[in-house]
Image (cartoon, rainbow, N blue to C red; front, side, top):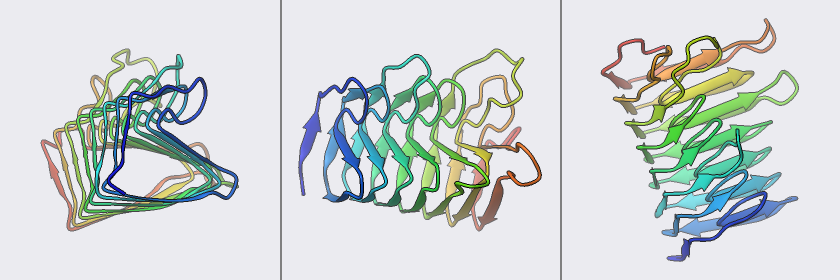
Length: 219
C-alpha cells in the first residue's frame, strides 16, 4: 500500500513487479513508473490473481523488438483494476497500457487509460485469445483517451485500434465509459479494432451507454 516502484529493469518479465505460478497480489495506491522489461514493463502476471486499486502506472516501457504490455501484461490471470491511472506507457508490439492474453479474465472499474502508445495495435488496451484460451474483460465507468497505435504502413490488415485492439477469441463489455480521441494512424478502428481468425475465433463486443468521441473510423 502506498508504495513507489520506480526505475527498475528486468531482462525478461515484469520490470517493476512479476507475479507467477498461482501468486496472489493486491496493490493499493501504489505508483509504478519508469520501469523496463522485455514483456510487461511495469508489471507481468502469469497464472496469478492480481488486484490494482488506486495509484498509477506511468512511463513504463517494453524493450523487445515486438514486445507487448508497456504498462501491464496479464497472461492466464484473474485481474481487477479500479480507480487507477494508466498513463504514458509504451509497447513496441501490442497493448501500450495493458495487454490481456490466454484465458485472462479481468474487470476494470473507474480507471483512466490515457496517452499510451503501441506500434501495432491497442495503444490503450489489447486483448488476445484463442478458441481454447478465451479472454474476457469488463470495462465499466472508464476513460480511454488519447492513446495511439503508431505504425503507419497500411499493407497489413490486422493492425489497428488506437484505444482497444481485440484479436481472435475475446469478449469485451464496455459500460458507462468514454473513448475519446484515440488514434490508429492510417488504419481503421481509431477507438476499437476487432480482428477475427475463423468462425470459432471471433471477438465479441458489447457497448452500453458509452460515449465515442471523435469517432471517425471508430471500428
